[in-house]
Length: 593
Image (tube, rainbow, N blue to C red):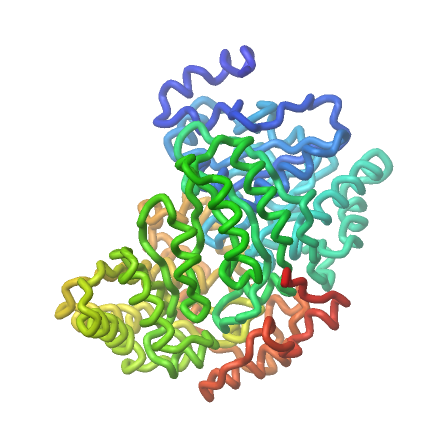
């Protein structure tokens, strides 16, 4: 039950906010551990709205693993929306943890999940609202350790003045080790010395030490997967049970950071997946579950898994959700099993319109495979198709852009030849962002003007096709992502000035003030477009070079050069391509075959 003391202090403010259920906690499935008896107290902070954070699977893993330990406690905090933030500031109130209703500064460690670069200024605002100094050098022994994990820590330099320690790689094991180590040291040495000791743990990077850090790799066991999680008070972004099939992807598309930083491939065992799905649905009451992976139908036993689960849930109204299917591994049987209760949209990710461009990005996918998979779906009752494409890729030409429209016309032609009605096609088109630790980390990003010209060109070509809709990602947002993701420590000053100027929850289009970014950049003599569209030299020391994910830099450069020649690389599920991860970390891929 919600504490009477908390209600007395905050009830009036909650009544004035749009969605008070975001801020009250006490969800079904949440932990309610005694704060005072816990030896180690961890606050997981997600710097985005409640409905985004509570859907995040990494947050669910850490929340569950820590709270399973009798001596540890993990509570949660999500960024308040602007209406509640203004009420808190107006009434001089600090933000608080959902379950315990304690202030963040009462915890031992406050850990931020950095999923997206556009959340950086929100982190600073949440520190301010917690009465914790924004700069790490200003904190003393009375303040908690400020930690960060997630994909953005692949380049920690832009946030290096604000975070005490970064977790590199998988957090399952290292987060527990950090907490246990902190418990041992907290009464024996000052805060700065504790940080030095924590930095000795593999997978921990401390900016004040600038230590070279190897990522941590966790094994996907039955025990480290949640079978319960807090159920949000209202519909969240991904309002379903989530079961992780595998981590890592051997396809190694050259623009994809997730596939490179999550190597080696690790698949859960079929029997564990089936058991986890049954237990998770039973414990949470969800009517949908999702099988999570970068490439779900690459799992060696995916059809057996779905067949078993389809049989178990038949007649219950419980459906399964799969991420986009790869056309070269497309299975009609899989599509039928995944959508046995209802015909929804089938999603396929060609990424590029021409074979040349798909070879540049190492997609290992032919036009014939894309068309065959699409026609197979249409023949069997799916009339809504969604394609994912990326524009602005390295070495892209306007012929490659035209290939996107040509591909759709080829699908329509195949429909006519087979006597089929045209499907409703939606193309979700994002803008290429060069990411650290990928073969395209050296590449330039197209300028906003270049992208706008390409969008205009595609829209003009598309006008003659009636059954397709194009949705484009905001090119200004993509430019800022590129600016942040490849920046160095000098960006800390830019982030700080943005935060002081009111930047908050900028991951939402309605909050993004691009003119403010340009104004701050001008003040600091920074050219955002120049930095985003910069092409790094092959022998240049990159800001993230002291963070090692196991893939050799020389291998990444070879892949970049192969992209220039439109040469593909065989997926590592088929044959080891000697990227270096397994030999460098003395590990191996784990396939359930």
